[in-house]
Image (cartoon, rainbow, N blue to C red; front, top):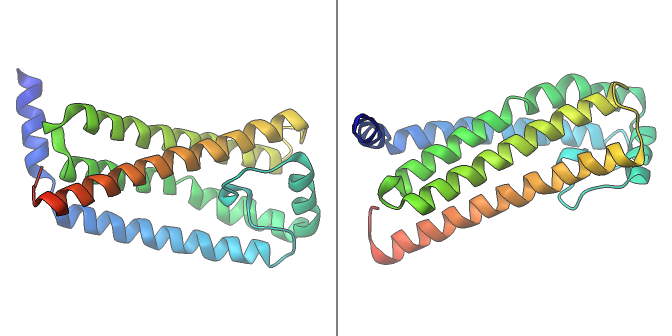
Length: 182
């Protein structure tokens, strides 16, 4: 019974200003990451691996590294990766607040599905970031298997993130259409 009291208190504490604040922080960090991505791409090659929604091959990985050179690689390692180690926590927390506000625990299957999908996106993002950092730092050798695994994590991250956003959009459309709070 204690859990139910705590859960109802937490549900009652979430306010729209929490979501707006976290959304502003998420957008700010996201915009900074986009700016860094553009700086990396300006060194030649393609966009950073993190934003290649459809993944990448060993050949693409090696081509980008060669085109970016040491300056682009250092920019990726020293600016992109550190900020991108904070970003999953920020967007994950923002999405969890949104699930709490727009779904709450009155629809437990939807609430927990959204929560689990959000956490899956965050976990894949962290694993992807660590692997990219390890590949760029020569901790992991750049091999077909290592790049394929990292690429799979990139695609999984975007898949879970897209599913989460799509589900939230459907919830918001339903709420708007029916005029319901929960």
